[in-house]
Length: 403
Length: 92
Image 1 (cartoon, rainbow over the protein chains, first blue to last red):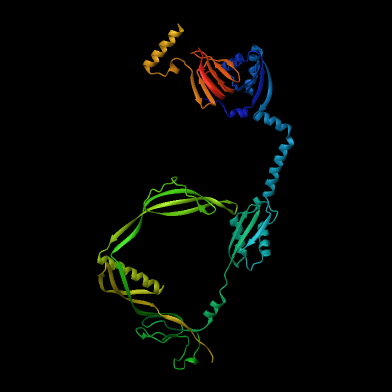
Image 2 (image 1 turned 120 degrees about the vertical axis):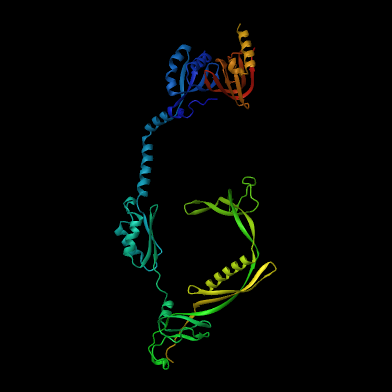
């Protein structure tokens, strides 16, 4: 099977012709022998056939026709050369197309609107005025707009009350997005202003004092109870505390505290482990339902976890209710681990430490720990851990002035 | 004489295991359903109408009959016929 120049025929152009004569069979044989590309030969009647021939071969047909006494008549002209010829006859149409594209191009290369989003206090007008200075305004040619980064940078420097500026073009729209600086919350401010004393959050032994403002009433190694005054917001004589100068206390008081935690660690531990094998399956989804096609993507793992990613087909911003789902299957298996008592104790200690540090916050640290009577019970190690820790025990207590 | 030559060619091709269409220049017909037939190694058209295409071959005339026959393409060694083919037959 040969397909000689199937598609170039469209470019070269071909002719559908009707031949009439008495020796048409001989004509076919001779044309074939001469290497003419004749195709789609149909017999119309005893003395007439129709066939398709490329334009260059048509010119070579003449001597053959003469020899066999056949006459030809062109029925139809097909292909690019004829199409172009016809097009030349219909120039207005061509100009119309060109004009249309020119129009489309020129209209889309102009900024048609400027939109401002995200501003709360800065007026739109102000931003639009600033954008105009940068060369972004309605009617501006798109290619004359400077880089997004440049516009952003200039606006940022001109708008000190704004913490972030984003500028982008979406088609013929220029969109500017602002994020305004957050003002300090009124309530928060007040709290900061009000004078306070520092009192003990819990009973502890004072380990260290870091007083920025105020007068400390306790010393290192003093033992305090919960609610005891640690740092006074008044300067001056402690006996006549109300006479001194009110400044408000500020600082940190570190107290040594003791914590006890009960920890249980199972000796047998089961963990999930990914084997690293993965496979991907694709399913279509229609109206937010996944259409599972059986046998298309067989599941080759016994235990696996799936991650589904939904790709909805979008037309601009409009999400269509169908699309496809990419499902990734990660093979996994359970690995069980047996711990010795020593390991379990170490693990329990580690966990308890982390828990405690989390509970105490940034200022906390652990001085020492002691594991008390660990024992195995029912395949679990049960133990008590005693921590010796240091943390900020200062709590704020507002000072109420006046009677 | 010619007959003897073709017989010898057949014997030679059987013995040497060469396909006969190559050795003896015999026609080779490929049909796709009843809609299409490719005939290789033909030696020209003898008759062509809507219902019959008769080809000259080394083995004698080969007739393809059917309805609405169209020679889709023709080359010196191959013909491609389309239509509702009912029969492909060697005559004589």
